[in-house]
Image 1 (cartoon, rainbow, N blue to C red):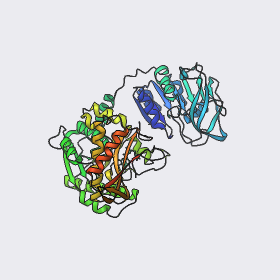
Image 2: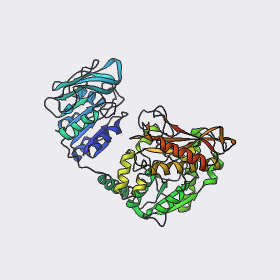
Image 3: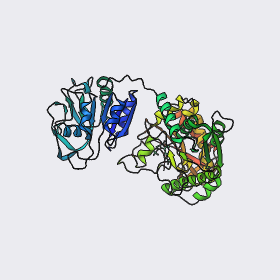
Image 4: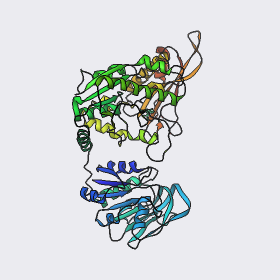
Length: 510
Ligand code: XMP
């Protein structure tokens, strides 16, 4: 076990993620955690994260000095490094200017932290304060032009500090540095696998839920499916999954979801399908603004839920398949700005009749969710099903949503997916789908003038869905998709391929 002590920085979840990538189990605790609890857990190593405070100011987040005397290796990152110095005889001061962004740093590769690293490489810096003087037992093991102590280590104890952010991928060799700490300094085994997460979650869910009733929002996407199966394994029929067919699903998806989770399916749970298509279309009539569409779809979702919950009787918990990128991009993960209000995160209306929300996947990235899915024995085709947003085709139809437009985009998307699978690309592309632009243009078909919609094809490769690049689909495949869509889908006379990366684009169009 490794412990990450959270001082409120932006990248704290990433720190945990990097540790887990070394196959080492890791938990995050607030800096308010009592040192006795840490002692009881007896971790192999501790990482102190970055944070927004200045450690020399009154009221700043701090920790007991005793932490550094336990003989457990400690690595401080950014604020964590400054705090360690502040507490152990060093000095931290405000710099004249902020060091932010990619910075070249020179390393002492004799330090255990930088073993096997290049003597000079790029790192991600983000700090105002800097370490102006090290405590007696420490030496500097990295520096940049503006920062005399970009990293330090103790001559006597297993204590290390890094001023920059090795957890961010912009730090060229950051992953290696964290691995060095975790594997070489802390001597972790690297034998943790997802089964441990699954077991721990099932146990935690059982404890939390007790005899309570649980209602799960099942969308049919990977996240909510994995969440539902996790809950089903934990509490069986105490779980009721409500699957809202909002009429904004992919072609045939409603029936497919029912086949897997319904009565004929393999899981121990209650399944309810609500056919709310018409209800959604009428609410969305005339609405064009993306955030408003999301809001309507999200709120309607809650309403449908409330109604179902009432029919079931008192419900104690509501499960959601929120994953970490949703949390960050909805502005709940620290200081990052709201990009899109992913409707399955936060912001539930006040008059919802649930006592508590359970989000078992909240700390996981997409690839980790898939691993959990496999661990749970969910069929591969479901686990590797592409992510599908809660608001569904509602945000893949630019402008007003109508039943006709839904049909167009469903048909075009089905063709696209079929051809991608035929070309053997369905596993290698992160996410791909057709969207309906709100543009009509002139074309010619047979001898007739047409004035129809343009379909946009999107395909991106991404590791964590926070950044993405357009996938390089062979032109012949695109060409086949184009001609099939034009021939088979009424109302479309143009097909485009979107090559925008994220940023500046987002993966979805709205
Ligand atoms: P964006 O478009 O933000 O998408 O680059 C990143 C990932 O999130 C999915 N997405 C959503 N998921 N509710 C969801 O549950 C939403 O409102 C939403 N918007 C985007 C998107 O499909 C991609 O996988």
